[in-house]
Structure formats: structure tokens, C-alpha cells
Image (cartoon, rainbow, N blue to C red):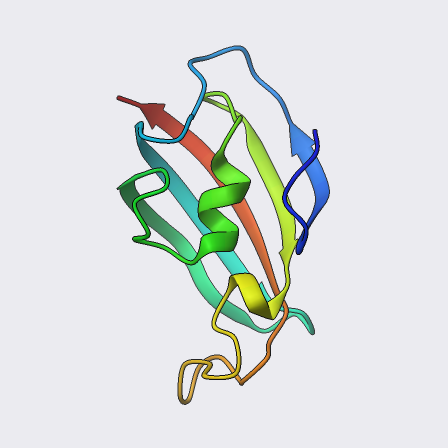
Length: 107
């Protein structure tokens, strides 16, 4: 699987369910960490339209091509996350993020 530049696939468990594509509504479970291991987002459920710019671009791009029941662990560069702004008190500026994404459903 070739992901966009700025996203590195660390691990993947593939399944055979419906595929998440741009424009589809998906349900995901997210676990996120800063690159040094500090948790930032744990066991969070989200529903969004892929490509709808609801979540950070790195997560939305990483979901594309996943199948229901599958998981991906990805490393996301700052330019596809919170860039030089960060999230005050939570995510520092120019932070590299690690996310584990589980695709729960595609509508």
C-alpha cells in the first residue's frame, strides 16, 4: 500500500470488508501518541466523510483504501497534522504523530 508522502505505514492488519474511499462516511477508532510515546488521543470514536477535512489530513489520507475490520498504524509528519501551530498544552508545534486507526464501518 502506497500512502501519501508524509505518512509512513508502520503496521497493518488487512480485512475483506467494505473499502473506505474518498467521499464515503466511515466510523473509526483512533489511538494517538506523540512520537516519544506520550498519549494524545486514546480509544476515540469518530464518524466522518473521507476527504471532508474534518480530521487532520494525515488520518483522512491513511484511512483511504482500508477495509472494515482492518487496522493501520501510521507515522504522520507535521505538515499533515497540526503543523507549526500544534494544540496548546497537548501537541507541541511541528510534532510527529503516531496513530493506530481501526476501521469499524463504511456507510
